[in-house]
Image (cartoon, rainbow, N blue to C red; front, side, top):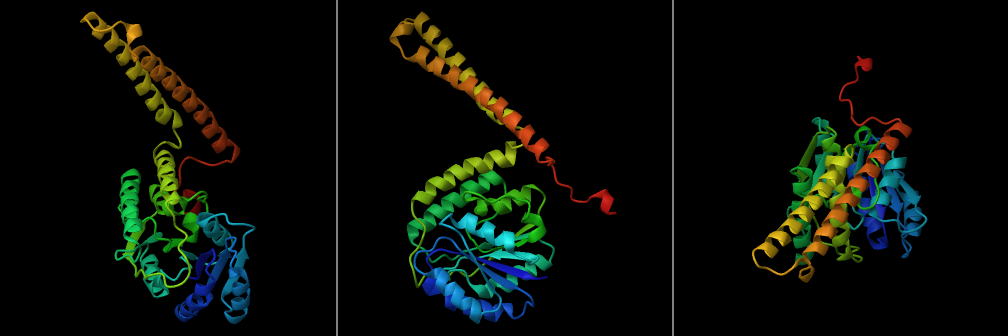
Length: 312
């Protein structure tokens, strides 16, 4: 099987040559393999370094994005032009170890569709490691998958498994969960995580909020994408029920000697619950119409076949 290593690059000029040197020593065992370096709007001259290195390393292909779209878009661009049977994204900051690549390939050869890296012993700041552990625990609860390290970029994918899964936002970290829900066989291996010695980290606290929002999106897509009315309808009915209970509680409180309705905020709170509930129900109706339009207009099915009888 041919291997395509995908490097999302953003301001990593100091790491590129030593990283590609390490990759050249590993990829010699995989004939016809390639490295696709995607320059994601670098401003430090990383693209110029990549162009120069493409003349030194014959396996290197360089893609340049128009501006900084983010890591997920860079990985998606690399996957789009990859020709290998196995797609293996990894960070360009040298914290992922190319020496782990054979372990990924061996695991894929055992019959797995996706192999996820687990940075068990991380060399990051303690706060970043703590936030990452919390995020991974939340993602495991939402996805139902037992992967320990969703944030590890270094993963191996069979191309035919992920080529129809769209990547956007920061969703590359959830790709294994999406594929697993659709029947992909997922494994996890421990990888060597190295301390950063050159360049600056691109991860800030702003990523925490993006992960939380993406987590909500993940929950919706995994559990309610094909039945959005059930998702929004459940929220709406719960809100309407809370509104009814609130006004009943206000009346009961008044009957036992409490303040009048106009002296408490409970009627306003009850109306708010009911209005939110109606809006959620209407949102579910709109989402249901959009979902049906999506499947019908794109000729997609709300399922995947593990075996097509026409191929027998």
